[in-house]
Length: 392
Image (cartoon, rainbow, N blue to C red; front, side, top):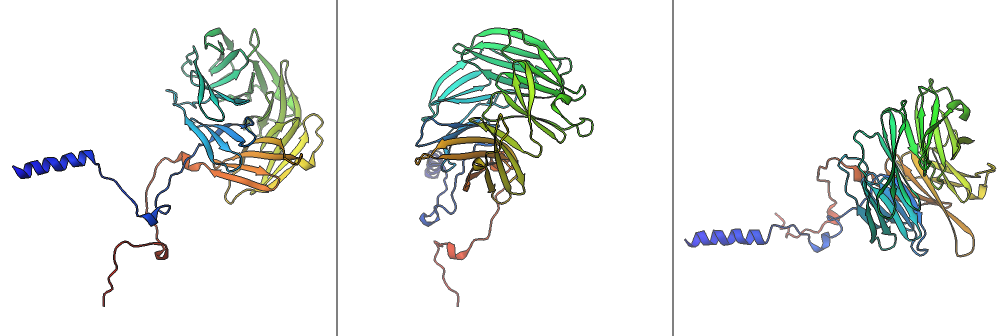
């Protein structure tokens, strides 16, 4: 009987005090570590609400909203959003205004304090996405949230009240040429699509009273024959709500999008990404690890040599995918520049005239499987806690 109660007592102790692992004091920092990541950056804006602690606000494909320190690259704060039921990206839209960060994720409009990361406001949107949507674009105005959803053959545009989330208007715009291989991208208030089979660029103004597509020949933008190299890419230009880069084959053009459609601004052949800041266009070219950022006046095209940057990225860095530029005044009255670039290997780099300020390797945020292996340990760095008895 006593053995039975001893066994019961043993089980009780195990349930109250589960097995745990520990480290010796001198092993701290050698065998334990925690790494925090944000993931593949899809949206990034510089936050100027605090001069002493400038930040880059990022939204990622891993449903993370985070702030990175411009000084060190470390995570200042981080929030992981819930993933929509359809598996799409959780954050469709990101903007930063003064000390407030606004995002649209799923059917919610959220506002966060950029300094404390506290949630200021959460507004449910009276909207349900249609099944089979190919793409979703979101635009925010002072009074409205506009959601455009692409389905084969049409675009559904929904306007909602920004303060209450109530539905205001709903329109379905016919687009018989639209299918799952059509390339589309949205800037702040306009959807742009390229359909190679027709040789046309289509634009749809979200805020129009009667939304309808306008079309323009690709040839009017000086594009190469699309049948030779049918690769198409449409890229937003960070810092500008009405510019976009359209690439067809080897042709790469900067276009200005306005209420009457679009027009060609400049040829950007050979560049990898572009950004605007205070009327200056910055474009990236890359040869190996050497990145060159060229600055030129957006209107005249005149080169501004003193604002250019030439740096060498860390070893084994990928190709540059996006660029965001930021200019600020130094204490001595001069101007300083920072370039935030994302690369194909999911790495993030903040660049200055002097070189790489910091880098973050975000590839581990996309890990699919993990296997632990034993590595050789240098005996000089190990302290054994068992007495070693020499054998004669």
